[in-house]
Length: 379
Image (cartoon, rainbow, N blue to C red; front, side):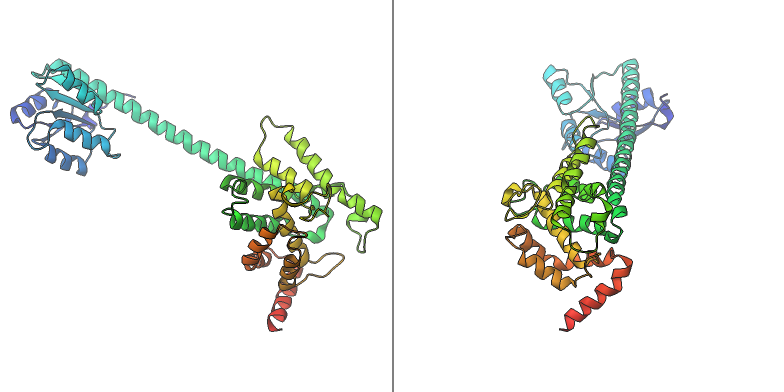
């Protein structure tokens, strides 16, 4: 970083023209010199074009140098301009006051040309170094932001890809993980200001829950095909085996978590969702028969999202239900299958769920759902 002095502008502010002439005589060969004979004029000049350094007299009428300095340092646009006081005031208190206001130096009159030259040169070099470091920090910060975004995108892709493993075992689920992920986010945002949930549903946690939602059925990769794809009703033994997908999912995510050095919220939520999304509010669910608030909030959100999507989607054992019927079934499960407050919130945004269902509908179900919805609306 070589200092190119010809590119730097120095503003000299002094109510005595001869003092400005002295400054010009010392510095004009190396810098472009602007002049102001009072503080108000100086501020107007600075507003139009910021100088690289200001040489500022203290004792001026109407607005003294201290007030000019105070105003410049209070403005984010001008606070980084180096200010050197040039003054006949030699008291230590005066110098201390100037430095406390943000000046970088304090030169007493009469001015020594060699001292003025060197101090101006030094402070311009320091400013240039600070500006360079600031720019480098901004570049680094931007790179960190870009890298973080890339990592988050890779994380999202990985979660969806892992969740899609379950879809490859159960092809009729189609866009199920994409829809449920968005249902969960809608419901969480609706509930975030509810005192029962606000401590959990912070913006950061909602993002983590959204990211982890695709893993809710990852454990289905461990369920045998003859059970997972059976078109008819499962036997008791088969259903017991199907229930194990919650355990398989939790264990798989727990094993993955063990391979990283620090725990991440989205993996913690992923474990909760995979393991507990089949629990029911009244304690009749599985795998542990948890009830009420013992069921993690993330899993309760997923329960509503998962059941709604299962109801409106085609399955090997059922055709898709119309949105209205799915909503009615969710409402019927209030206080039994689902957290009552979550059902109330769902009822307020049920139309948003339907919009997501239409946007990410499986191709063979688009016309079916449209016909069902139109038919129900005409009843």
